[in-house]
Length: 201
Image (cartoon, rainbow, N blue to C red; front, side, top):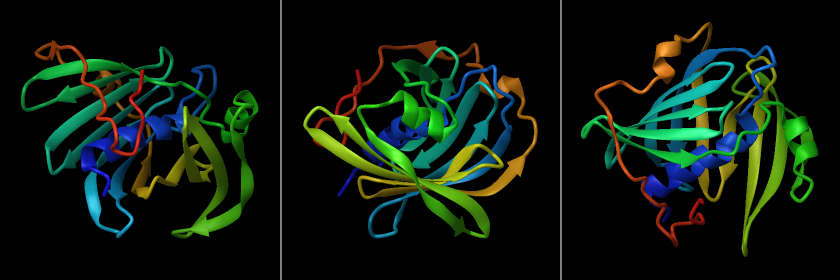
């Protein structure tokens, strides 16, 4: 069983592989509901997603509480906020294009590419697949990419499914991507080893 904390942490890192983007592109801004499920289709976390042309904010609730994750796609940095303690820590992100074709072209060491067009939840999507190598660990990832919002609406990896629903296109307030002044920065936590994902540098 993959822990909810490790699953959601890994989900964030893997999702960035398909979604980060240079700010020079005109990208669709939107918000959506986001859920994570295990291999038994049990929901392990749920929340809200906010995507602008240069940042992503995810508010998620798990069995361990609520957390807010803000990723600056331009600088490749992620901030993890704990609303209960008023603390946050910084961790590295991997900024690559929200265009999956460009991602595959720029990551030649990975098995990556377009598979086929599929309709998912009434939406015409492009199915992309990649084998991600982390040392001795290889993780297969499949993403259903919605060209209208330039974002995957479903990602499957390591027995975890991430699903978007109720997508609402429209400008997202820039204040959502700022860290409130009351938050105090602390040393970042490390992803637990043996939970299905390697420790991220």
